Length: 248
Image 1 (tube, rainbow, N blue to C red):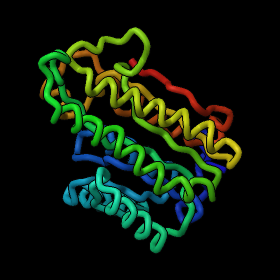
Image 2 (image 1 turned 45 degrees about the vertical axis):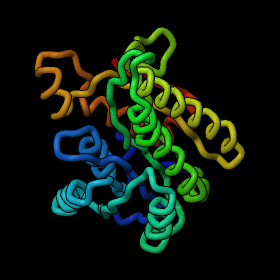
Image 3 (image 1 turned 60 degrees about the vertical axis):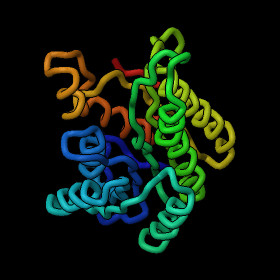
């Protein structure tokens, strides 16, 4: 089913049949803030998920204060039991259908040359990037099936052919796994009317990236990311599935 994009907005924010779940909404100035704002402007009630209770509460409160519908949930998405509990909470409060799930939770760390790398970094990168994507998809696919909706994952240029991966093997391998997971879901869920895609943005202009890279570095704008994500979840993208879209 899905919802309409920016040129054809949802007719009413009271249409509770159209609901979007966003993970990794993050702190102020991060990409999750812009994506949540974009969906809210389209009139979609939002289910916001972040590991940090303070962050998700702040995002939800800001959206509600602006006249939108949003509910925040704190959850460690690397923990299968917590994710299962989250799914039950969402079902109890919002029903058993989601028109879109956008998985933004994750993180980046250099792992150094493979010969000198840390196993802890390897496990951590897979946990926060790939395991979170898997557990979120596994828990909420039944909700998305009910709406014949869409999933969007965040990959990385490091997961694309020809990318620089030296000294970041853990991150690149984890994000490559996200792409493989997305493609498996796209193939498996096609009979159920569910679409799955991924975006692969270069460095995004977030508060943390500006602090680490400087304001003059080349960035993808947060609003560009949000525009692509809302498009991929819209009816205008109903023929697109199993695709990785780069942003640079």
